[in-house]
Image 1 (cartoon, rainbow, N blue to C red):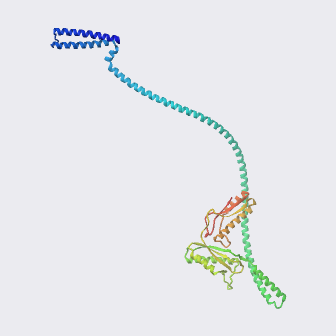
Image 2: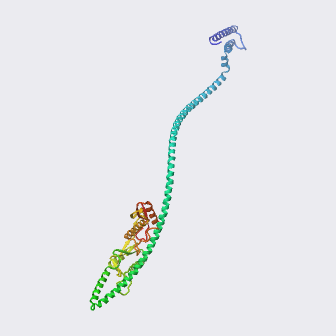
Length: 446
């Protein structure tokens, strides 16, 4: 029983119970009954209250009998509320899970899209790599072909290298032979110079004998006309021979050079200068210069006073090393005193390391002898340039050892192997200073 019928039943039941209660109350009031020793009025009120309670109780009982929902609402409402709260909490949790799952689904969908795009890119990259692989395979085959050609050329180059090495051995042997010939030539030159010195002495002796004969012819001039004429001819020839005799020092020729350390005490400096002049005198005597005095004086040098004083003044004013050089200002003939001009050069750097001093064009195809001679001429040119710059030289006009044997040999081999015209440069091996007893150079073939 639900709805309107239940309401009607409840109204009828309430009316009946009220009517009964009212009737009972009226009877109690009329009869002035008393319950529990109370006054009738209070008894009537109790009856009325009990009637209301019965109406409510009957209504509840009737509703409970008529509807399960009412019974549930009356007796199980707390459990229902607890269950409803639990269900609401579970619903909220499920909704949160649903939201989280939705976010995860969205994230996975996005990741799927990213993976799909990466997959597409990977597919495109695979296609490109496949294409490049094909090109690389083609290039590899081409490189293998070129490698085979290179191996063939390498074999050919190896054979040519072996041939060049054999040729180099031959050139080295020629170089050693040329060096031996050079040494023999130096020995021969020394022997010829000694022989020249002996011949010079013989010529001087013959000249003295000729002079004696000329005097004898002069004494016989009055007695023999022909002898007089012959004496005149001999005198004329003697004058010619004296005029065209041997020149032992040419004009402006450097006789000798030496380093004077002017930082030493004055006495030590003077001793250095004196020793230098004695060496110059020895060189002059060895060349054939003689003193103008007849008392056997061995000092064969003559000076201009102004030149000597100027040179000594420069030495006195200097506090560092200087180069003192003796130069023959005029031609000097054998048997005459040597006129000497003294020149003082202050020390300074004349060439820096790597600076070109001289150069020459040398044909590598001209043969080992020509190449060696050209390189020797280049070294001699460097020697002359350094002397012109004021460096000290020995009695032979040389500045010590300019070039090592290995450097000279390497230059010869480099020019010969080129088989062409090469520019050979002589460069300073180190910084070259004027007041040095030697200099180092290198030969560079370009």
